[in-house]
Structure formats: C-alpha cells, structure tokens
Image 1 (cartoon, one colour):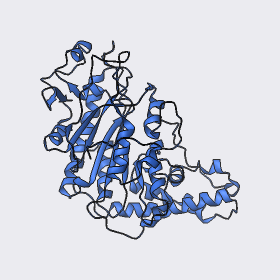
Image 2: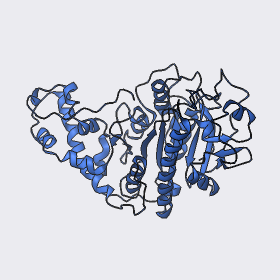
Image 3: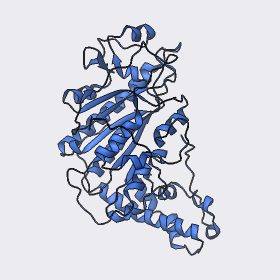
Image 4: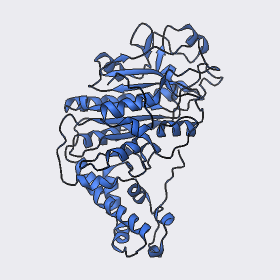
Length: 413
C-alpha cells in the first residue's frame, strides 16, 4: 500500500559516482532502510540496560478492513442475526465475555487475556466523514488526519520528530516489514523497516554496499547526506543484530509470519535497545467472499502469536511495560453480501493488551445496529483520541504538538 515496492539491487556499481538522488534511492532494501533510519540510532551503540518501566507500544495493523461485528459479537442482538443469516456467529459458538458480548471463537487466547484483566475492547472507533477506500482510509489512520486533509507524515513519525529535538536519549521505532508504512515517517526522523535482524546484518555486510560506501568521493551535498545516512545504517545493522541476540527468547512461537515477527520483537524488548515503538501487519482482511474461512485463518495466526508473545512478556517481567494495540482502516457493512462475505464499512473495534491497563474489559457500549448511516455503523470514538491517549499517557509525549490539535484523553491507560 501507499505505492510501496521492492527495488532489486543493481548488479554493478558502474557510473555510481555520478548517481543522482533518485537513482541512489533505488539501491535496494538496505538503502531504502537507511532513508528510514532515525539519525540518532547510533546513539545506542554503547549498551545501556533498559530497566523495567521502559514503556513500549506494539501496533498490529489488520490490513484490508477487518469485520468488527464478527470479531466482537453482539450475541443478543436480533438485528445482527437478521442481517447475517449465514454469516452471524451463534451465541453458542462465541467466547462469551458478558451476557451481550462474545469473541470470535478463534480468539481463545484473547478470552484468556480478558479473564485475567489484561484485555480492553473499544467499540465504534472511527472518524467523521469516513472513506471506504482501503488506501485513503489507511492514509487517514496512519497520518492521524481529518478525512479532508492530505498529510505526508505519520503520527508515530511525528512522535519521533518531537522526541528527538535536543534530547540526549532519543527514542526510535521499528517496523517488521520490508518497507516502511506512512505511520512511521516523520519530517526529520523515520522508523527503520526490516523483516529480520540477521537478514539486515547480512545485507549490510555484502560486498556491493561496502564497496559503494568505501568509494564515496563526491562533494555534492545531497549525495554526501545519502552516503552519511547509509554509513550509519551499515553500522547500526550490526548493532541491531547483536542486540537481538543479547537475550534471545526461549519461548516457543508459531512458525507463521506474525509469530516470527513477535518473536523478534520480544528478543529486542528483552535486550538493551531502547526502542519505544514496534509495528507489524496482518492481513488481508478484505473479506468480500467466504469470510468465515479467511477470518478464521487470520485470527488463528493472530491468536497463537499473541498467546506466545504475552506469555513471553509475563515470564520475563515485561508485560506491564508493553501496550499492544490493534486497528484496521475500517470495519465492514452490517448486512452480509450475496457471497457470504461483507463489504467495506466504517467504524470498528480496537483491542488493547497489557498488564498495565487501568480500565479493562469492554470499555464502551456495543454498536447500535438500529441507528446506522446508510447501512453502516456510526463512530462514537474518534481514533485520534486513542492516539492522543497512547502518546501522552503511555509514551509521555506532547500529543497536541504531534497531532496538531487537542484531543480528549481516555482512561484505559
């Protein structure tokens, strides 16, 4: 999404000395990562133990528009079953949380987290004048903008910008992906995107990039900056890889993409690296057809990975310091379609998982299915209030500066 694409490494460095900025950015995954690297990453090259209490946010993006009504199920709502005669999940199959609310049956671990007081659910989260385009709506969520605004920085990228002005111990963000999402792109600082610390290390130590770095002689200011950034990445790749091995987790994780990503994140959380934000994606939840099977498969991957991750955090005394939050660019329509699926909708629910929650369980009322906007749910909570709360109360940042407006803080943390 956001026109992100992989660009293959060139096979030769011929003509590199006259390379222009646009061509330089096409070197490959590592050069791409270097442009996403916060300038301050090298500040952490001297190990400094991160003590308990260092707050971390782990964002899981449900890409494609997850169906919230079959995630958190209104098990006593006749309208839900009337509008979804084949797709509605029966009360007897749901994992009951309250008399009126149940979880998708694939989310057994989430039911356990609910029972032990470390899961919170926010219903009807969205924004005014919602957009049903995947790309545009995700853009709005990533940038924390209004639906009529177009912003080219992300809320977490601006967090990096705000935290790294004149501070001696700046923070940083990492995305477990080959490319960086808009959410982690700031004006001055950006998160680092990579799938595997070892792969990043091996790439950075390849002969091509080392030769490119050694041959730098140009005096062009733009190219000098790019070389300097790449040099920092070459150094930092080794540092990240070494940190990932400081306290390798002994927890068994599922052999899935999300399982591998959360295992990497756990090892980094247990290391000396002072990373505040980790970002991963799961999808696609674009369930126009045969929704039951697709959502069940994705939720099984989510459930098993989160179960291993939260167990790992608890066993290592870090569960109170980590806030995991989920979101999707929009929900689905209330009425099922003719293909046993659902079409693009609006408001949705969010999960919050932590040992440090101040409010737990179902935080607000279930969606009102009798009061719809042209067949879609009405949002009751602006997602920017959630962001403001996480930035201010969990990360200790000035949310007004980062979001460009004053939003109400919620009470779940």
